[in-house]
Length: 474
Image (cartoon, rainbow, N blue to C red):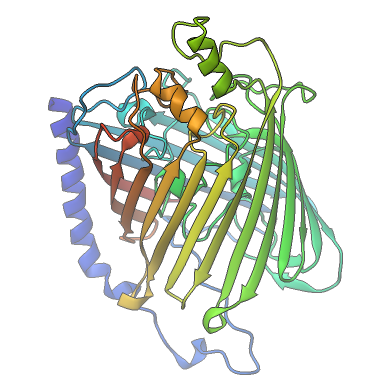
């Protein structure tokens, strides 16, 4: 209790300091309007202002160097729980904090080739050690607390552009692409180590745990069991085709050797993942450009079968249903998802996801979700003259297959869930947040998540999770 009180006292003081900073900078965020800033019919529109950072980035044409820190602290009060199992979210009040520090570097080798390398250091814990919730509350948490705390290479990739036409368009430089302009029609090739969700299942309003939502099944479709090690990265080859109003991307990636494992299986005849996504752009409401993404994945790995595990238990072959009680094998898990975003004006937009996977084979790399529905709304602060502030609200409903339900009800454990028994209900989650821009690259935020039927169990919960986050951009 002493550590709990101390930590939340520090966070409360941080909130007070934030408030003190916010008042004097409120006017500083107001846009400055002048005749020179207003484009005429003969001038192209000006580029959007860059995100404020602690220190101005050098205008190196060939190099990129930046960094960020993301610190998240969460707490939940005690909640109703008549029983619990080995993988339950513990019902006693608890708090936990996590940190992720990232250094982004890049080198543009030619006008069409670049090398990108990112180094990370992460630490801390999630509430309940990230167990007991399919939609866990903090995307930054690494689910294996025994991992080394030493810095590691998160991304190391070669990025190649192959132009297919002469028409070009301006492009925003980011840690994932350093080019200032790109061909309108082009192929892009990426080879190396990265996270598939750097490029697949992205969403302008609901993919960024640094500034937006934190729940796992909000920032990505919970059904997308994308190939990754424990930290969320894999080795992959990706090919993209971009046209004016649409794009398609395909990636072949390595799967982990065991569910949620840190080691990847390099034998691609035995284990691999295929991912393909179509992306469509169209001006719809009030000439605002909406985006629709359609994704499918097929995983090949040493995955167990929920029905087989249940049958083995009922036949007396195992003391409890055991998803890993099978010889080395290659089975297939596949799924589909749809993802949309639609701006309504320059400060408000709506977004959502739908996802499904076959639910027969074990959840292996991301989380234990076989069906998901999501709808949300997001805002930036332009409407109240604080253009770098952000806020939003989202509702997501997650479910699992009948075989998966029976497996958990009979006492089986997944790599995240296992209450010892189960009175099934959909895990319904509401999340909201507000991110402040205080000064330069400092962005504190507060949020709240409410979770009904945690771990799909009507006998437990609900769970309320307040959140404080501090993000710093360098």
